[in-house]
Every structure is written in structure tokens, then in C-alpha cells.
Image 1: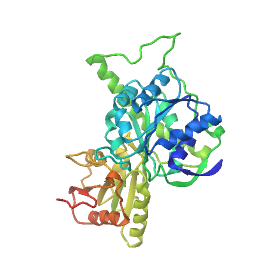
Image 2: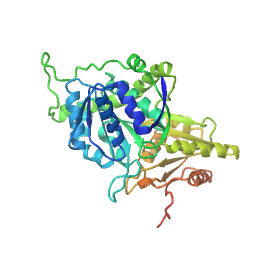
Image 3: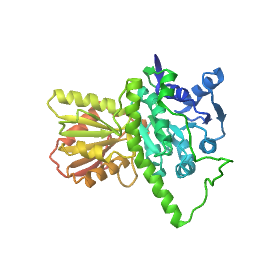
Image 4: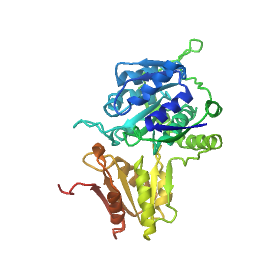
Length: 390
């Protein structure tokens, strides 16, 4: 194992090199480009034995990955923002075809106005496409998810494509020390990819076919079960990963100081670090604050949220997303988890960071301040840094 000073993008590329997919289909887009650039350099210098295909668009990148996966090859691609939206047609093809492609998405705002900075509207707007979705908090988790994602996606109980999301610039372009494991550990952890869901001239089968209402419904139900099954396989993968790599992950969600918390802030991605720092300072001031990070949005951690929230006085969701005309998409999912569990506490939605706008320590303190108000059972949506009626 070595220690390297890497950006989130580079860490992810190192993880993909260790996995060594047979086909990489690449198209550049800010702030993802560094991932495929580094992988192309690795292929060129011989440290990565993969077929690197520079395609003409993001739609082609995912189409190429599907075609290669349909031959039984392990595949990888990457994108961001408008590129992810351009892939939308192929996202449904890949999940419906049960092709366990791994794709890294650099979270970035969507147009218009044009903006290259990071929020999470791109991936969260596509939650219903049938992909597993994970959100990394730092460069180490980025590298590890590059490895874990293949184990999970390719498991026979899952057979579902996997999107790993890295916050644009906040994670993709910032540097930190990352432990890079030896290739032998990855070989011990990750089995070779074997599937019956492929073109096979000895045992021919129909792929990417049409199905009428009666059969289509069944296929969609099985697709749904694949994503649900991922929760079990995520746990299995992490239990196998920990003794080999020395890092234990926490499944669908990560709780920080939540055991006795009165006020819990739920969020995802890199902002978790600042939220945790603020919670520490509030604890020093006598406020029982906690933070819950949603590591996965699909499958959704309904039980984990309910188990944590049932002990709290109020919860808030902080997200870099909005479903225009309603509320934040993450908040909708969290509220559903609370209602299904019969938990009637104040739940507030804070939307910030759109277009990469800064979220400060003061903003997070204000969130906890609002949580401490006596507003039992109240729901509300707030926009950080915007006049409520402005």
C-alpha cells in the first residue's frame, strides 16, 4: 500500500486502474475530464490493460459501455452535468438491460444559466432511472467506491448499473493524502466478472428486446428488486472490504454524534465535513447536535433514517438540489421515510449551494438554530442566502 497526494478525480482513476476494466469509453466534460485523462495516460504507459475508446459524445460513451458489457466485458465511463442529461436515454437502457456498468459523475449544476460549478441537481434529477447512486465525502472514499461499486453492481442479486457521484471541484479538484492499495488486494476482493446476460453464440439469447404490458411490468419489478437487493450486497461488500483494506464503511448512511442528538442535520457529499465540525462546536456549547450523511440515495436508507430520527426532537435536510415548484428531492425522500415509520417531528428543508454558491459555517449554525425553535410537526422549505419572498 502506498500513500499518494491525489485529487478526488485522480483517486477515482487510481481505483479504476486497480479494478482494470476491459473497456473504458471516454468523453471529456468539466469537472470530470481529469478522470479519463489519467486513465488514458495509464493505458498509454501500460500500467492499465484496457481498451480505451474516445467516443464523440456522452450519449456514445454510455452506448459504447453498454455494447461492451453486453459481450461480457467489465466497463467504465464518466460524465458530468449536461453530459449526464445527454445520457438520460441510455441510463434507462442500461438499467433495463441489467448491465452492471460503473460510471463516475462529477456533480455540477445544469444549464441554464451555464455554470461549471458543483451542485447535485444533475444526478438527483435522474433518480428514477434505475441506477444505484452513491455520494462520496472525500478522495479516499472516492477510490474505495471505485472498487466497491463493481462488487455491488456485478453481484448476481443486483446486476444493476452504479453511479458514483463526486462533488464538482469541492472533491474532484481538491487534494489530500490517499492510501492506494496493492493490486493483489483488489484481486482478492473483487471476483472476475462472469454473467449469463451477454451475447453468447453457443447459447444464444435475446437482449434489448421489446415487451408488451404483461411482461414489461414483470421486468420493471425485477429491476426494482435489483436496486433493493443492493442494500444487502453493499453491507456484504463492506464487510469483506474492511479486513483487506483496513477501512470500515457504514452502509447506506453514516451517523455522526447522533446517538443522543436532539437536533439532526441530514445531508450528503462533501458538506458533511463542515456540518460535522459545526456539530462539534455546538456540542461544546451544550447543544446536542448530530449529522447523518446519506451515502446512498438509491437504494434509499429508509430504515437508517427512521432509526436515527425517532430519538430526535427535529431534523433538517441540507441539499444542493431543488425539484422546482415543490421542495428538495432529498427532503421528499427523507419525509417519506419519516412518515412510513410514523415519526411526527419537525422536518425542515434547507436548499443551498446551487451553482456552486458557498455554504458557510454561519449558514449551518442558522440551520441548527431553526431546528431548536419550538415547531413540533412543522415542515418548511428555506433557501440559504435568499430572502424568503425575494
